[in-house]
Amino acid sequence: MMEQELDLSIASLGECRIPSPMTGVQFIDGIRHVLYHSDLEEVGSYFKSGKMPPFFEMAGPREKIYFDPSKLKCGIVTCGGLCPGVNDVIRAIVLSLHFHYGVQTVFGFRYGYEGLTYKNGHTPLELSPAAVNDIHQKGGTILGSSRGPQDVAEMVDTLERLNVGILFTIGGDGTLRGAQAISQEIARRHLKISVIGIPKTIDNDISNVQKSFGFETAVSEASKVIYAANNEANGAWNGIGLVKLMGRESGFIAAYATMATSEVNFCLVPEVPFSLESLLSALKTRLEKRRHAVIVVGEGAGQELMQATGRTDASGNIKLGDIGVFLKEQITSHFKNLGMDVTLKYIDPSYTIRSMPANPHDSVFCLLLGYNAVHAGMAGRTSMVVGFWKNEFTHVPIPMATCERKRIDPAGKLWSNVLSSTGQPRNMR
Image (cartoon, rainbow, N blue to C red; front, side, top):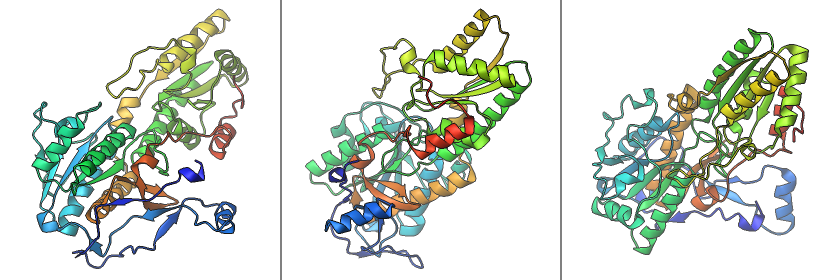
């Protein structure tokens, strides 16, 4: 990211004049920030040139808030694919609004942005502490979800009609772009409605956010699958365990699950191209030496090896070819032609993993994301997402979260560590 592009300023609806009803908490004052860069040389270069280094606004409760809680109504919407922890975030938002600020009315809009339009007829749920009491124990989202754009004007009409003051949007890149469009329409109408995003992506690919909720649960569940694949591979002469994990454009789940188990011999991710010939050659060498192998592949890897589908989903994403099935067929055919017997077990746990409840660590993370989203909204912040950077919760402008996909750097430390763990050739092109 070029430094001239680092506009980390946060939009606000106006001056905060109302004393917060919260007591006994550590309030964040206006001078608390989180540096974008952590390297001393990078930070020092700004000071040497007479510039202030870029920084995020620190998240947390403020002593003065913008909205009057006694008059405020809020809304929550969840969009895109399922992810561990969505219900945890919903619950945290409702509990914080109710118990920290005394907000009595929270609408849960059904089935994503569809719930904010007229034509679909989805009646909002009334979310109270009792209604969300045990939802964190369940996977999925109690509000339902959907993909694809909706009419922005209609969605803002709904917010106006219901007198919603803060809209919380839980979703990934497409959801956040939709939140930005809603925020822009609100500004065009000169309305005082805050839009706060909570980044949701199991792939952990939101820019300028250190990690997203559900990712740790996904890695934990994927690790269990890899252990099973390794046992299957070890149980047969020339056994091969092949596991496909989620990761359209970013291979973070595959990379971290690979390192978590230390049982993987080949990790294939979208960011690092490989050729079928190189993979099959390296796999043959591995089997001749050890008589078993485990391969983990992110769903977006190796797409250039297959015929493009040419189709898109409701969100406009290109429908990927199935790299798992492709590799299974190619590996089986290759060794059959060589006259070399192999036993291949293929496992695709993608939808099982994403619909799991959050693990305890993710649940804590979700709770704090929800709390900080509420604090930001109550302080009149808008057109932003709650981020996490250098182990601090931050406020991130939506454009900075959606400017590009966060991806593994093939020349960086993470991929170097993956290669150290697997022992696979650095170059398999």
